Image (cartoon, rainbow, N blue to C red; front, side):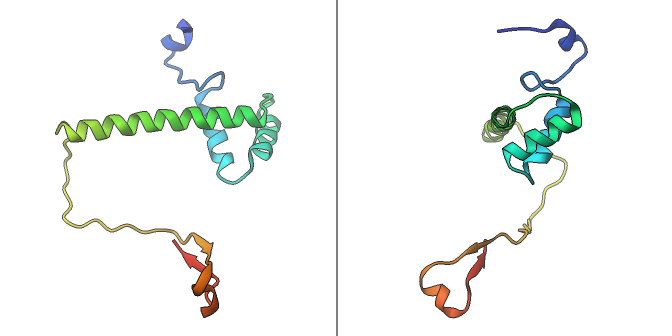
Length: 116
């Protein structure tokens, strides 16, 4: 395990070899582009050389951190340690239309796509 004392003293939150700002750019880019296109855009914008696999590694590392944080919150909730200021009796959820192609009997009814 490696410790970078200056990074720790400056409270820099790196993901691998990349700073938090570059990681944010990668996450924003990957939501709209492929790994190859995202690596090309980031390389052009920042001058850093990052491969598509490097983008994938950063995204996976961030995903693992988020899963760990969520697991900690779930565990704290199960132990009754999570408290909040507001409590809602009803919670509404809105889903932004993601459509998928339907298969089978539904396809013959002039509906070729369905919303999830």
